[in-house]
Amino acid sequence: MRIIYLHQYFNTPEMAGSTHSYEMARRLVKQGHEVHMVTSRGQHNRRGWVRTEEAGIQVHWCSVPYSNYMSYRRRIWSFLRFSWLAARKATVLGGDVIFASSTPLTIALPAVYAARKLSAPMVFEVCDLWPEVPIAMGALRSPITIALARRLERFAYRNAAHVIALSLDMKAGVAAAGYPAERVTVVPNSCDFELFDVPEQSGREFRHRHDWLGGRPLVVYTGTLGMVNGVDYLARLAAAVARRDAEIRFLVIGAGREENKVRQAAEAAGVLHRNFFMLPPAPKAEMPAVLAAADVATSTVIDREPLWANSANKVFDALAAGRAIAINHRGWLAEMIDESGCGLVFDPYDVEAAAERLAAALRDRQWLARASTAARNVGKERFDRDKLFEQFESVLLSVVGQKTEQEKRLAA
Image (cartoon, one colour):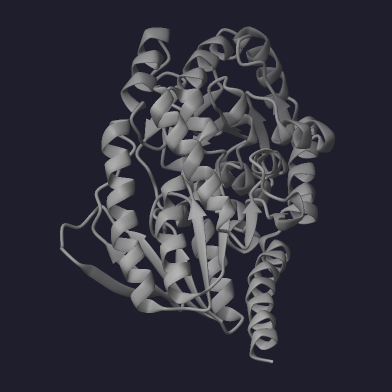
């Protein structure tokens, strides 16, 4: 197949951020498919398109500024500009199938345009419950913008030959919007065991580079510091933990619109540079060493129910690294943690109780060993990317095959 893969936030392992689309696309190439990734790169100011080859993927980059620091209005403008440029590029490239990965939901605009122009099927990947998430966050407030977002959601699903959802909760959200549940396949975010299978020495070297860490227990957060993430919760948690065990260290690696808020929360709590430390974003290729040094990995969101459906990359990286996970929300990930015993689920409002449980867990080497084993086991059993890729590829083959059969019937 010749696949046109639309994803505005494509990253390689040499970049900071999610590499989900990179991992899926390179596996498609390995299977003999031709993949053209249409994406944006905000780091350069060149006009027009830049083409590179990444692990056999033909990547087409356009310059569309975007960052988590932008206001919602500027982000929407970025989404629309990329949609316009991507629609034209995808149509020129041509292909057997259009695969569009959201967020943002506006990725449906170039996907549907190209699919219609090329008479090709479109598969839509739902990575967040849009527009429920921006509505819950207050990014969409007026009845008009909410109605337009709902209309765009229905437009995306109505024009999709098939939908891939990153969690069961997301599948339920797609079905609730009126899309046939039998045409939704759940392919969650995945574990890259090959990447995270690093020697223990990698973790020790990371620890030795930081005098404040040494051999102390370590809790890490690796990812975006945005409004959705609510990472200031970890600053409050670090303060509560310090009252119980001053040796436990917290490390946040990342950047985003809320970075100063997180730093100020840590300063106000008196923990910044004491037991709470912050480092800038690092390439995905450096994350295995960070997790090898960690005892517990965390994933946080603010308390909004639509966010419970998330399929955060940092959770699956922790599973691949065999690290206990701590989250502060309910939903399918909380159920997975409770059932498998691979970590802790905290009440987002009872920080003292969370600190009590976390401090006790970090000093219980037997619990950490059991949670580590459970994390790797559940990752292998349910989230191994090589296994989940087979489902992913079968969806694309199926929709292309259905179109071919339809064309044969019409020709006859």
